[in-house]
Image 1 (cartoon, rainbow over the protein chains, first blue to last red):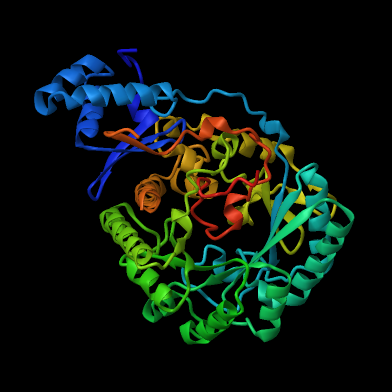
Image 2 (cartoon, rainbow over the protein chains, first blue to last red; image 1 turned 90 degrees about the vertical axis):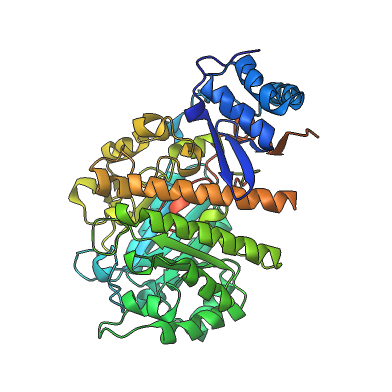
Length: 456
Length: 45
């Protein structure tokens, strides 16, 4: 094999430099290599000369002498191992077998805060404020059990609005699901997302006892948090929620995330990460505000956002070198044992594996589609489910997204968030360019960090 | 161990034995809810 003529390097490898490291991702196999200067130059020339090994060798020999031959030899061995320049996976995946296995229960369509950037219209999703009755929650659980067929691991997220405004029903639903676990092979994994205002000792006890994963909303520094996360009277919430979050941390929950949003107003968000870490939290997520409102990240913000992600990467490396392991959600790549190729091609699963149920029992493809009449899928009371909507979402896989076909990051994002895509491009199939650029930048940093951890 | 090209992560995407078992976590149920990713989900098999 002396030529890779016709090989699509752009689509199938990602060659980049991060700090002083030369990194190559083989997109289709998931293999990652560290290259020295000569190998980096050789592969750059291989791309330049459209896969001609000898022309690349000629150039490198001129500059690097005999070592260039060794690079070519190593490259051929790596190629023989199926770890570089691999071809796209064309394996047939039967998506029709995908069934609902995760439900987001909008347990309360109201909220005790008025966060300014809230995508859910301050908690009611633009609908009548409501609390989910237990009967609706019970039917949603029954619906999930029925629809999930042979899938064992089921997920239920208590979401809102503020789910703790309806905590009694949360407890009833969990009890009901635990009964089902006793009589079937189903396992329920619960998550609860809260602003923390109502988080008291009793609720913390319950969350710990029931092994519920908890997502705690905090944006970072007091001034960052209180700029947007405010009470109906417009007062900041930092001083109210922080003691509650610390108490939760003291109780050692099985799984938690501090989850923040960054907007155009805190593009120095690595400072917010540092603040959260200084508070003692080591599991966190900071998400960009997406959309078209005044808070959402815009194209002109990207240079600063990308530079800030680089700062964030450096901070995470500093923590690691100081012996402090910080789990940052979007950097938690599982490079050795990540999801299979089918999962990577089908993406988030909204409308197919994942649905949201409103307090009235209405079903939508995900929490960001609630109230969108065109995406109404049915109701858990009569167990109706519009298969036309399900089919639409099941077809919006990576394979059907033209813009994603030649993107090196495609197996990490799965084609992106449907809702973001729709907001930005009016199409489920066209990716939101701003999200893509941020995602690729995060991936480069995350891969770099992971490699450094592995080589010590 | 190669000198110029060090493989830190070997091929893994095409070696799946339990492909499409669908027992892994659903992306949007964890911490984000707004900016979807799949690469950080863990395979349970």
